[in-house]
Image (cartoon, protein in one colour):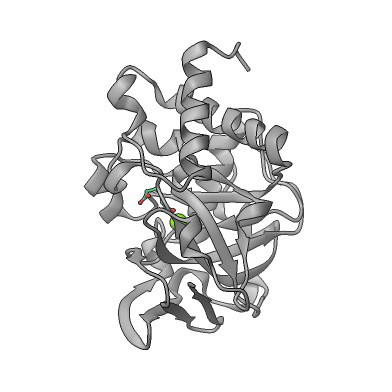
Length: 263
Ligand code: 0L1
Ligand code: MG
């Protein structure tokens, strides 16, 4: 990695403090409009290294963002993005999420992949991803951009680890070969009222295609997925906001359900 410049150091401090204090901040590119996407991915790595030093955070997987054409269009981009899942992001169905630790959280339904083996390369296909996957499971991702009003450029959101905050994985894990991965229907409800419906087809046409894209991006940077990693393949519908007292449940065809409660 190149030497850490003072401006990168201050961006890392800025984003880390915002997260620790659950406080929204203006986007990084307001002060540094010339930051590049490559620098943003470097900042993401540096932020993780900083957390590792400060509180022992470890990588447990990878998440994809902007995997729907609708979200890409909204941001004026043609590409997905990726970030890292950390051990301290893992949340559980049976343990309420604490609203006081978050800024303005939203939740979105995703399909989680559990890797059976390492996967690295620059010409990886969806078939390679499926071959290297042990199980898939229903999941909820809680995103909580550190930026004011969830407004940012592509560079900002990548530096902010793609708005990652928490994730919950449901209890039904199935082989990727036991289900039509391309066409899993989903209904997400909040406090018993249906809020979103969606399909795995919304994830770049097929969640394994989305993961193959991320593996190739990681591969170009000399990285890859590891056996045991959890991968969140991308949102199957729009994210919904939630508050203290809310319960969100997403039900997936053939995969059962996954839920979260916020206190
Ligand atoms: O997981 C996601 O799709 C979030 C990516 C970043 C964009 C956002 O915060 O909406
Ligand atoms: Mg997501």
